[in-house]
Amino acid sequence: MSKKNKISLPEAELIKAIRNKERIGSEALYDMYSASLYGVISRVIQDEELAQDLLQETFVKIWNSIGSFDETKGRLFTWMVNIARNLAVDKLRSKDFRNNSKNQDIENSVNLIDDQRNTTLNPETLGVKEMVNNLKPESKAVLDLVYFKGYTHSEASEELGIPLGTVKTRVRIAINTLRKLFN
Amino acid sequence: MGDLSQSERHEVELMLEKHPELRYELNEIEKALQSYAETHAIEPEANLRDKVLGTLDIKEEASVKTLPSVNTSTKQNNFYKYAFAAAVALLLLSTIVIINLRSQLSESHQRIAFLESSNQKFSSRASYIEKELSDVRHTLEVYQNPEDFKMVELKGMPKAPDAKMMVAFNPQKEMVMIDLASLKMPVTDKKHQYQLWALVDGKPVDLGVFDMKADSTGMIKMKPVKNAQAFAVTLEPMGGSVNPTMDEMIVMGSI
Image (cartoon, rainbow over the protein chains, first blue to last red):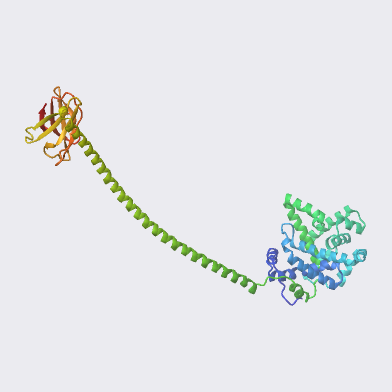
């Protein structure tokens, strides 16, 4: 349980506050999304210290480049996840951990992270997490590569050793499952 | 899902423009993925919050805003003060100029009025002089050629027994002149004039009108006539009449 009360704003107000560089915008942004973004970053960068640095970098970048966010093109979260993920992936490539992380067994690494890390104890998502865990391993694997690690479909098909068409199908199925799950 | 890979993103944006209902679909997908991501959320260390927020460029409300506003408001105030002073000065100047101009204009009008009346006086004097000149010329003509002119004396009629008048008649030149100095007739008023008639073959012929004034001199040339047997003067309304008013006959005389 956190000691402070977490600040939360509706999306439109949050975007406006960030655009106006208001203090409340920064606090709400952190309280609402730091955990999710940290989770995304952690799927790419396992090292805690590095992940924390990246989280900071992510927030700075979100804050400073809010001008390039266009709400007609998609949701705020999607835009932020892209920033987080890209920073993390770039960092990964620059440090030349490429070989190591790519050759890791995808399924194992996913489970490893879930077991070892201080995953959120948000009661809302607890039940959902169990359901998510019931996703087929193929779906989880594909989502992990494409959504969290920023692989293109072709890169994912290469990585998983499956045809491009199959990747696309699995992605579609995964999203449909998630939609049913969360609606 | 096209959002996740660069190359497909542009395609998606084009599709969204064409089919707005796809926006809803896309939003739903994004929501689902967001929820999925949230299930993988990891709470960072507590002390990271202040550290991260500290590095963000936040606009503080209190001090930053007032400084610029003080500067600009002072600048604006000064501008308005000067602008106002300038406007007032201009107004005063304009007012003075206008008052000046008005008095000049009034003066000019007065001078024009004066000049106009002077001009009128001169005009009337000039025409008077012209008439006098004409009269003198006529008189001169008679005196220079006495043998050509017959002097006809017109005697007073019962209406004005003491009236007298001399008419100079030159049949060759068909000239008829009245000698004003010889006029002894009642003074005409504004509504009446004397009219000279010539009796030609028993019929009266209009020779023109004239006024009787107190001390007129000179001769007036009347209308021409050839075969006059007699002359007469009647009192007619101003401007004369077509036919003589017989009972207003003042003087008459035969050649």
